Length: 210
Ligand code: GRF
Image (cartoon, rainbow, N blue to C red; front, top):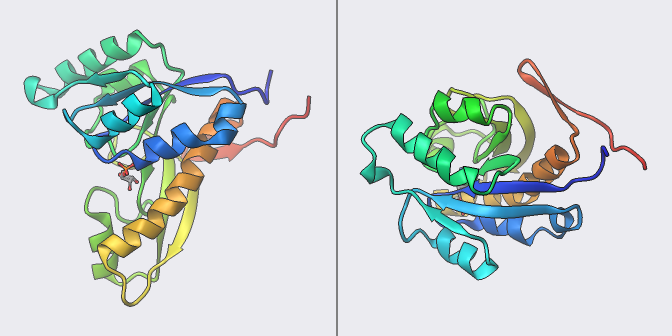
């Protein structure tokens, strides 16, 4: 039924995993039946694996250094995920570009969090670029993943003010706070089947009453 949210998600991450933690700790997601069924990393020893173990979430380590090309890596990724059959794949600081091989298998079922107001500042080393450019506002974006880099249809965004004395670290901390809010929120909307992709735009359907 629309409004019910039973959903299995896989979280793919390469580093610290604070977004993994925010999703795992979200009481709203727990209440509607969203469950992280596995955590995948391409970096052996990444702190996110520690977080996953503590939370009792199975970890799959797929070291990118072992694979000769992107497709081979992504085929292994597909095989590992197949054990868990996730409904949605959430990238959370996963420092790899996914190939069409992967994206076709999970078409419209891969989302990402990016630490800027896309389409401004795609790519990496975002907070440095934001400060160097001198913009007054930045933020974060949750978007569907397509075959470009940070180009897919936008689900949610949040705005963060840039202060004159900001350092990349200070700014990253404030952007992170917004990430922890909008990423679980976007997953909730997906779980409740309230996201409709219409070309570049994502329409958010109103909540359904029982
Ligand atoms: C976040 O800033 C996210 O927007 C970006 O990578 C960072 C991951 O942080 N894609 P964490 O590993 O979740 O702490």
